[in-house]
Amino acid sequence: MAPKKQIVIVGGGAGGTAVARSLSEKSDSSKFEITLISPSPLYVYLVATPRMIVTDEGKLEDSALITLDKLFVNGNGRVKQGKVASILPNKGDGGGSVALETGESVPYDVLVLATGNRWSPSYVHFPTGREKAVEYVAGYREKIKAAKSIAIAGGGAVGVEVAGEISHYYPEKHVTIVHSGKALLNDAYPAKFRKDVARRLTKRNVELILGDKIENAESTTTTNGISLEVDFIIIATGSAPNNEWIGSSLGADVLAKSGYVNVKPTLQVNGYNNIFALGDMIEWKEQKQIGKIAYGHLPIVVANVGDVANGATPKKVYKGSMEMIFISIGRGGAGFVNALWGLMFGDWVVGSVKSKGLFVPATRKALGHAS
Image 1: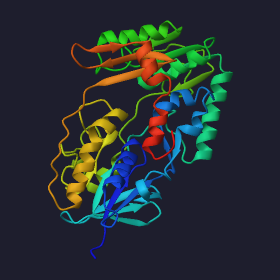
Image 2 (image 1 turned 90 degrees about the horizontal axis):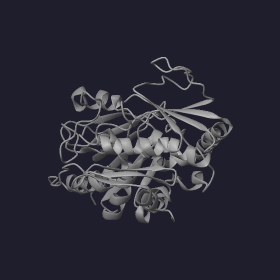
Image 3 (image 1 turned 90 degrees about the vertical axis):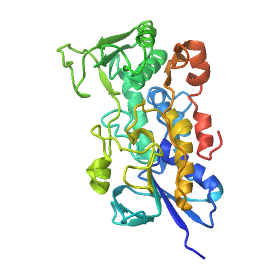
Image 4 (image 1 turned 180 degrees about the vertical axis):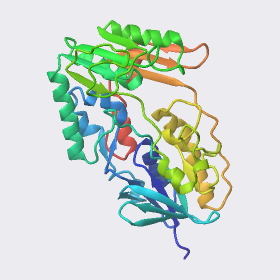
């Protein structure tokens, strides 16, 4: 009997777990062995974290810090906890191995990279392991509860949602968002929508300081010299590429000038037919969002990994995804879908679709857990 083909997935976030579960459902366990390598035994569901760090209502630390032990369908796969140090590809398309920081080597025939982005120093950068993560959440809740005035560094979707949650649970607190742009969010969205988000926040008495920055969590003055009389600063700036180790392993030309990974429309890494990448780490002209993975990247990668593993030429190509965003602001919010003339939605739709449950039950089900 021929040895099993080794399919290795690096990254236990949204992209890696989605690929692992889908492949485990579709692959013949007698022919393929699937390994997911993750530094943490938990999947931190980032969409729930703005509410999780503000309140213990709903005990989101129990439902949105999700273990990976039920990830694989019918047990068709394994999770290996560890941090990858480098990739060691064989010449040609003959597979290779992944080296862990422990010195251990994990061989692969097909490799999928889904390591996401670097969130540090943002609050989204959770520590590894349940105990430390729960302590981390409790620490934020205590500081937010004790503070009379709070500043949030970053007016992207994450910063807006954190402000919305604080204003919902603690309407008496003074909340300020300091954002480097001239309007909230970024230029991927029309000015009308960005103004609507700002209007909804100011209606909740959230102060907006635009065209300015907070350098770190200890800053008492903005870059433009505005004094901040606050008790607590939450860093909610965006993510950044975390792919230097990929460039040093596979060659600098694998990375775009932006630091993201260059991929073909088949989502194969440039120059490597048996290495794929998806999620926030890839160079693609689109917003970095979890929805892009589930409805855009995932079906392409799963189909093409199957083709390559079976010795066939990958056929599916990614053509991009429509831009859309639903931002929770308390129990309502604002939404935009770039269809027709540009559709905008308000409290009722966003509240019903996202804010009420934050998609937590569906996410748990997607990782093999009861909702």
